[in-house]
Amino acid sequence: QVQLVESGGGLVQPGGSLRLSCAASGGIFSRYVMGWYRQAPGKQRDLVAIIGSGGSTNYANSVKGRFTISRDNAKNTAYLQMNSLNPEDTAVYYCNAWYSDNLYWGQGTQVTVSS
Image (cartoon, rainbow, N blue to C red):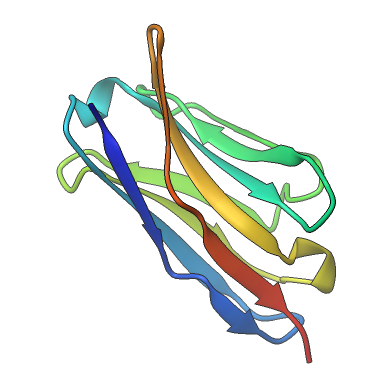
């Protein structure tokens, strides 16, 4: 059983930056594909970025060039660096971990971009 805990959300002004963290416990972190998703009020949960066990990355078009996903296997932690934030980025951000038939989700962290 893998447990995921997100942190780093908060209120930021447009144009600002935040770094989200997703700390994992249980399982073998280095094996997992790690993903960040977000869900705005009244909308579906959408993929933001993923990083494979080997470090390959993929991003939603809406965040390319602004967000960077990374992982530190020694710390069992995945990160999402978010720059040039705009109000459309406001959402609850969730991380997940996927390996074989196993998929785990964190509880989410709120990101609000507002002046």
